[in-house]
Image (cartoon, rainbow, N blue to C red; front, side):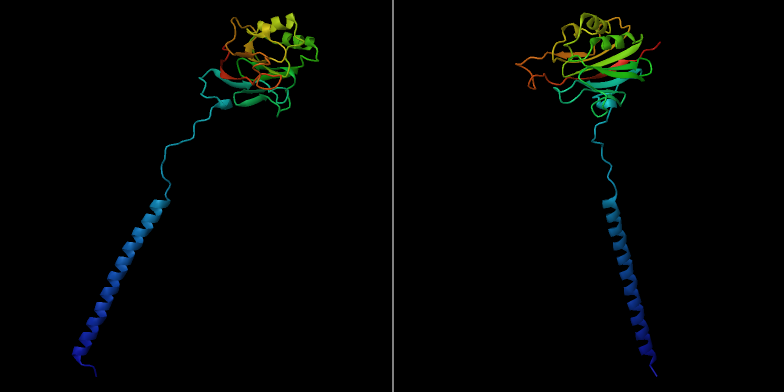
Length: 227
């Protein structure tokens, strides 16, 4: 039979072991909590300031105020790449849409709603200028007229066609020549010259492409018609 003193020693040893185990688990629990906290802290998404610049309609460099239509357009590149017209983030005319051609490319836009009414292109090298004249005669008051050239825009132009385009607000149509590049936004019933126009002459000494000048690009905000 075990003596009473031995029993007490054994009980004390067991108690000491249990106490050591208790503190060991307590320390382990603290370390686990600390380490898990560190993992979550490292994996949590960091709040950073946005670095991507905001995107505006048609890729404009700035947004247009309320009551204006956003547009961006480019003339053709030599006789290879056709012109492109974007309005309110909608590609109206482009080579990808397969609705552009050599000569003068035209998009008619409802000046109040921004809705596309009609698009067409007119070959001013081998085509008939009367087709362009008849098309322009159908344009109603309040209609926005967007024009972009491709290849040669002027060989078949006559005075009647030039005057009709001048009446839409163009300042450069009277001097538009063989293989010039030209982009323009005007309107039927406009009372002043349009601020939306660019023209570059075909010049062998300054042409970017052999036989053709560089591409023209233009963007802006067109006031919507209110009545």
